[in-house]
Image (cartoon, rainbow, N blue to C red; front, side):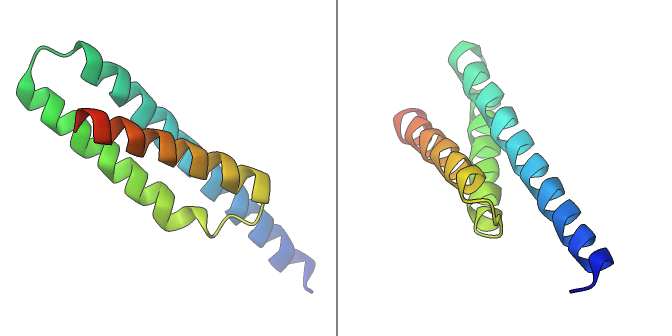
Length: 88
């Protein structure tokens, strides 16, 4: 296979993994914020943002070729789903 194509594919995977990790980290931060917010409107928005992050992770995690990273992201999405079931 063309080395330039392989490098592009590697970088694409790296960028996708970074994006999804950021989504998971941000959603975790939102979970913390849900616990302390006094505003019901803010809480609703935070829960919606967590749902959006979970949706993005679920949509794109199957494109991750590294099985370990994919499993970690899946576990994080499961944890966020559990949080939503309890709080949302």
